[in-house]
Image (cartoon, rainbow, N blue to C red; front, side, top):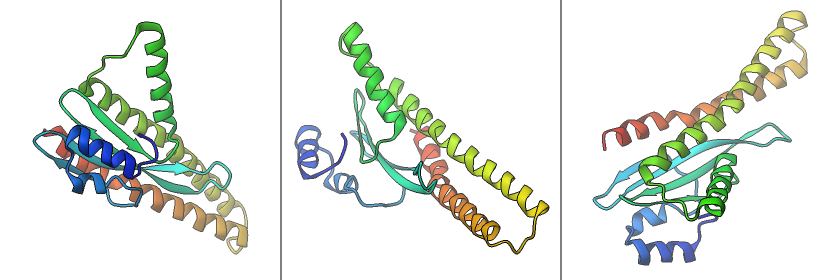
Length: 178
């Protein structure tokens, strides 16, 4: 489900009997990642970095996931490339083979790996920027305003990236015990 709103929440409440407190967490407000284990489903809120290709700044995209025994519901408000590719792959598969019959146990790990893999180019770009800056610092005057501004920009990107990704360890550890 893309662009969560009242209509989508009402549908999920009626169709799948999802707890109101979990559904309210799907509304487009930035929050901390979490995992809630209920008898009927597992609910996860995950945050992923999204890079603005023009400014190269990093923002946050929220992905909500309800995992039931035989199905899952994925909700997001951003155009995360791995989720677009997943949708296109499933549509292509359905066109050639009929409706896809994947289980949550098959798809959820694949989705999570793709989302984590999506983060690596961002991390690599920041690491390359640090390397380039280091070269500039050691070959030029340290008082150069451009160098100082670049240093602060890179520091902000590193901090933003780490904040977004840090909490995933706890969520994945808890999920692995289910």
